[in-house]
Length: 284
Length: 234
Ligand SMILES: Nc1ncnc2c1ncn2[C@@H]1O[C@H](COP(=O)(O)OP(=O)(O)OP(=O)(O)O)[C@@H](O)[C@H]1O
Ligand SMILES: [Mg+2]
View 1 (cartoon, each protein chain N blue to C red):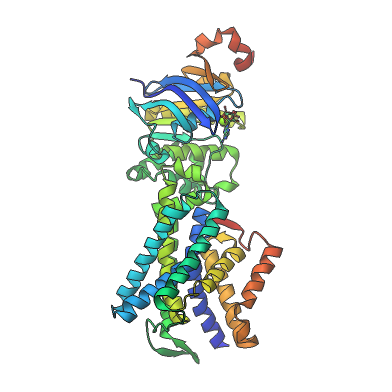
View 2 (tube, each protein chain N blue to C red):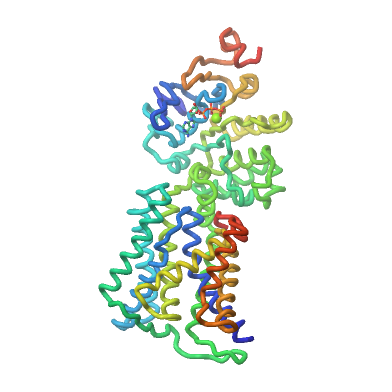
């Protein structure tokens, strides 16, 4: 029982981090960025190359992965999303294509097989009879720290309020002196950064694989659909619903069904409450 | 020199032309009104000054062309806008709506907030309310307040009293008058009803189908038989 609670909390923290960057773009830019999982892919492989292959200290490896994620986010906005402005279907299709191309690139460079990413923080600790890896614990603590930081930025700073403003009313933001284009740019960079960091932790929790962008994308989409939200707190809540559902189904039902209940939940919410449990897309 | 001057302004929505060869000027510290019926092009005119439509012709502020600037840059150069549908941020509090208005004017947040709260005490009482739950009159106040938070020297207000009860209209009119008298703001309002416009504005421009049909002081226009029926409710 304790094992389930602890594992559930840890996994959910990671899921919240994974979903957050996706939610940001969805609520501020109103774009379903289907290439979001690619940030995790890039983050994981960049970190692997820098820290594991070249032996650069891990915090610096993480920083470099985050920077590359940020750069990819900025480039994607500038050269793909902005030129296709307003055409959501085109944006969704092209972002999906981009993810597939990136996957092919990773296969080309690193091969098709999966790679083990060594734990960022090695070691195991016993908590109330449950064994917890320091690595997942670190991921969870990092998630919470990032989410709290993000919450403060969004609620308490000028740029954060401007992000909320753009997500709620573009014209209103512009006549307040906010340049929606710059805010979008900032959000894409932030999203790429968050995705890449999440990717490093996710890869160290599972493993590095060229197709590792798919599962996190589904988690992120699930959070957006189930939550229907741009709310940071809502994202955290839904990530916990999904995280616990997974852990419970693995522990009590069958490990093979991992993720299946998440899919069923997505479909159930779409049928019963299409606007999502929280029903608001604006960033809050 | 005119504070704001439009020279032969044309505005377009795609191929459709909404303003035709509009020229007007506003002197510093003056309140003028643009009067016109539904669809005359009043909102288009104000949107054009904010750089939000496709235009040809010239828009000068203090003699300098602002045609090429982005909306955010126009705000930064001292133009505040309260649009007809307010465009507030519905799930943010009154206070946060006002703070977004301060985006380019951060050094004067406290003093501007004090001004807004003095003009509209209700906004201070309701500062934590989400604007999605507010009445039309309250939203108009937030909209004007947000525009004031940008530290405007020129304020554009689109139909300040539309849909408001007479008492609230009066409050808004008093507030606009005080912005002009006490803060030295230059103000452009639009109105369907010339009678209300007259209580505030020193000069009117009459807009019909995107064309300036007449201009002048209140007294000059009142004598114009063509306008009397349509705009003064004779
Ligand atoms: N976004 C738009 N796309 C196409 N045409 C538009 C758009 N906005 C306004 N128009 C057209 O431009 C003309 C002027 O509209 P505008 O909104 O400026 O009038 P208005 O004087 O503000 O009217 P109202 O008193 O109803 O607010 C109208 O014919 C309108 O149909
Ligand atoms: Mg209008």
